[in-house]
Image 1 (spheres, rainbow over the protein chains, first blue to last red):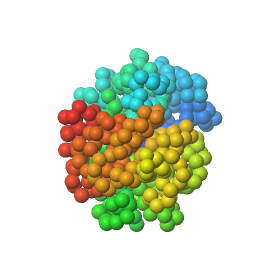
Image 2: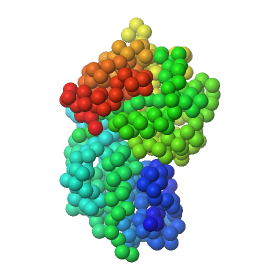
Image 3: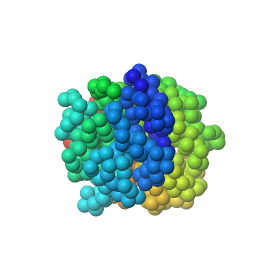
Image 4: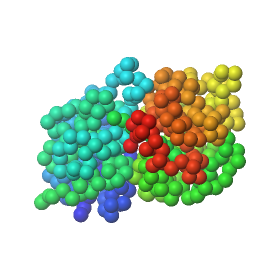
Length: 203
Length: 250
């Protein structure tokens, strides 16, 4: 199986590559359009700032390329956010694959010191609605680090609460995305990555 | 619900894990990669690897070890020691570190926090503060507690947050190595002052100490070393103890 990890100006791509290697999969970290288009699976990871990253994707014509992919695509963290319609971070129009929008967690004085920003640590995912997940994953803990979140809408494939519900995962057609870091979420995360690799797909 | 985190800390010297009692007497306790993997299996939520001699001897950090850790570990980990400029941080990020921790270098050059946050994001920057209390005054120290800095703990922690730190790791030098419990009063004050997560360190001796640190000290995460390394407290036991005490853990 050919797995492409999209290489762009965002951080922490290395750990996704390592997580796949632990599952016995050699991925290529690439920005080459032909290589990305011909892969069986595409992973769009990332940690960074939304508006500068979107500008980079546009300059390198990766925005259109990603939106037109037909094989299973998995966005992770910033990847999920960039696949949405709009982000409050730098007030930027994103790829628009999902209808949901990205908002910032607001600090609420009455909820401090329990609810800090960023939302950092292990939290549960629930209401799972995607073949990315299976029954064993309901209410399992995943590792999150983020200050912005996707609203809940019709593409929502998993919920998390902090303290209100937000989209922990999104799915539309061949596009999958998770806000948490499966590559850092222990056995639960490894299972989600395996599920993604095992999705059925005929090119 | 967001769970409270348990974080074993592995102090590294010459590629081996060590733990100093009050940062002075040092004895070796094993291979960091193997220990890290064991902790992950046992349910540790994160790990911290500190190159404890790096600042003191002016050594740069241990990128090759970090690569091995990143490859073998499926939970987040922070590395610290000897990070004084952007390129040190960049090398560690490329090697697979999730976060870096800066301590003395941030005190000497607070702008470093701004620069790191700007380049790599706040989530990547942990500011560690080793502080000592004397006559009700908490002062940050440098170089493993050896050098006073003139910086008051609470204002320095808030400044670090304002400059873009993503987390504060506070070690009480009065409590570290004593196994008499965490500095809960100072922790609670810090936690109420900060809007970013707080990691408590120094003083863990019993499971009850962790429960007090989360309830009285209001910390988001608890860090300890020797009690885990020497098997005095097993992480699965600690987690079930905390769960029974009504604290949300994974």
